Image 1 (spheres, helix red, strand yellow):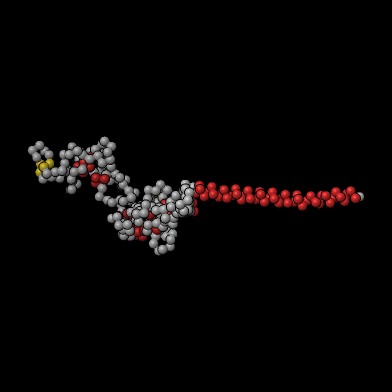
Image 2: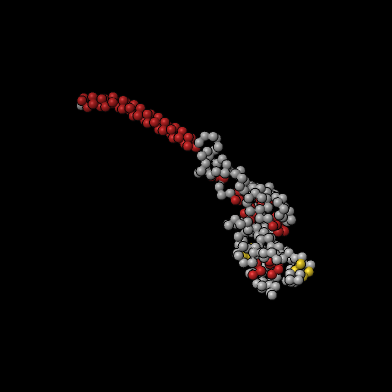
Length: 266
């Protein structure tokens, strides 16, 4: 007899997944049948359990995915980043550390999601937060911080400054694919391989690359050739040293003989 069994402010009809357009707690229809059921309604099917926890939604508070205190079935708000601040109030709808006013209403990658709600506006696989130069340690596409302000900005973050334009081409990095200085297909902001450690820029760190300069010659073969060349050079040095010592000995022999003769004359 309770139209809101879980007392979460959202009618059982709506939480069950049925139509209650006038929000009177009763499923909409065209009339009442003799058995008391609503004729022409979309009710009387299995009630929803959208979070699949084994409990019908009308029997539990919520679900409330954006944590705004309104059960999803009755939530008419839009909260893209699920931070509890409606997009109509939120100054950063996707929590990427870039103000929505700066991102504008454009859609850089043409995926149907405006940049202000897209955490990867250029669709290059690197989040806007990281490409803007901000901290996103857990790689969830949102700038790291300690909380959410009443206006939806991330508190305690390093965002909300001018986004990076590392190649100085006048286009913020989050609005263009790359930059990708080592041409490995990973934007520099998300590239864990230092270009200095990837001599040929093929995306394989030199420590793991069998051909550091992509010249078609295995590094092990070149290393062996270098070792052999060094060995030959050392051998040549030893030969030259031996010859020099022998030469000195030959020169020293006549001098010893002269010294002996002088001693005999005394």
